[in-house]
Length: 114
Image 1 (cartoon, helix red, strand yellow):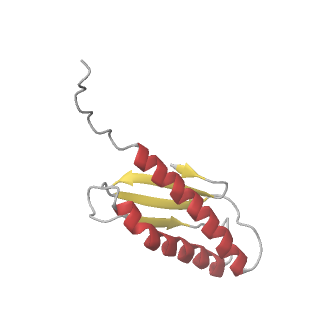
Image 2 (cartoon, helix red, strand yellow):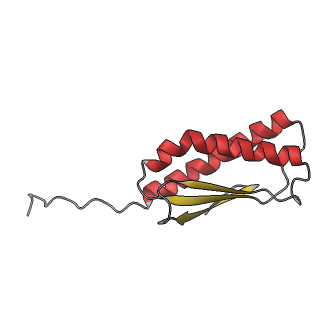
Image 3 (cartoon, helix red, strand yellow):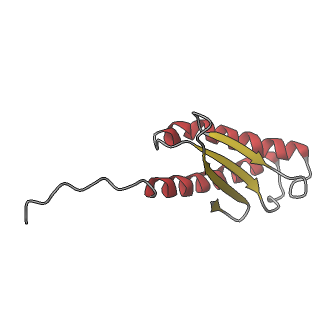
């Protein structure tokens, strides 16, 4: 799991699907305006489409579930989208770092210094 102040991403290895999948949970209690909830979802989907190739190069397939867990900042939709993009990039960087570090190490070649 990766987390910022407002979002959390849960990862689960997926043997069922052959592609990475994205799920979004944007509850009304944190964002009452439907227009804002849709804008947040669009921003996450756009970022996921852009990063899909990076994720797929890692090899294993996962399901990503993104959950809004705090009230987003109040402002215009443009400001909301900018905030969402910044949060998304931070979380995707955390996820990629964790997945990249969890790969098994390659076996070392025998040393010639024995």
